[in-house]
Image (cartoon, rainbow over all chains, first blue to last red; front, side):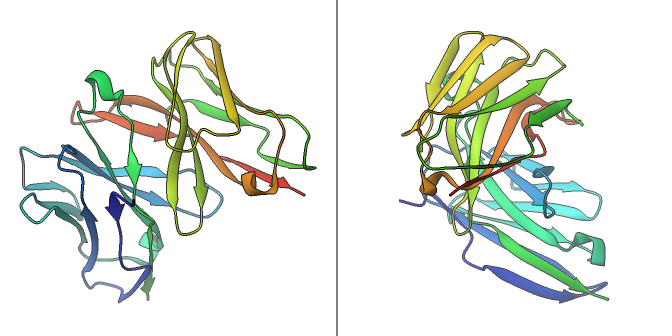
Length: 116
Length: 115
């Protein structure tokens, strides 16, 4: 049972345009969501997170939107750059501290390619 | 940089042999995790630790054991490696991000091949 799903295995965009990566979840106990970027032969790198008490969080070119009723989150990258080409994972946690010990459930990943 | 190192970075072993992967951190983080990454599955939690000698299972713990005898080291052991354990293994710690929220940060990974 995949509790976090990224239904698009890949996405291709032109440099300067917007990249939108999507993620759906099924577990209503999830209340903290994160996006990671991963280059080949490296560990995942934290990008941005959002708590369930918010519906939007921005950090520079990256914005994460959360729609709790639809159990859906998305990552917007504007403008996209060739260096953004990587695999992007969404992840979810139930209560980042406390008894869940911060355990993360990941989606399958989306390969983003940004063409010059 | 969360000060995480993993060793070895690459390993090739044969079915049935024991294998131990090491995760080392230098910043006294309490929580540590082991994940495996496989195509089509993203990252899946194997085991985690919430303190010295305090560990628990994740979603894919069968065939793996862990130990944490000191804060800085979290060891993952495959008692008898199988080909299905060929994967890339990542260690992670929990630390505060710039928004003062707990976030997991990952090590560089160990690529394990079981022949």
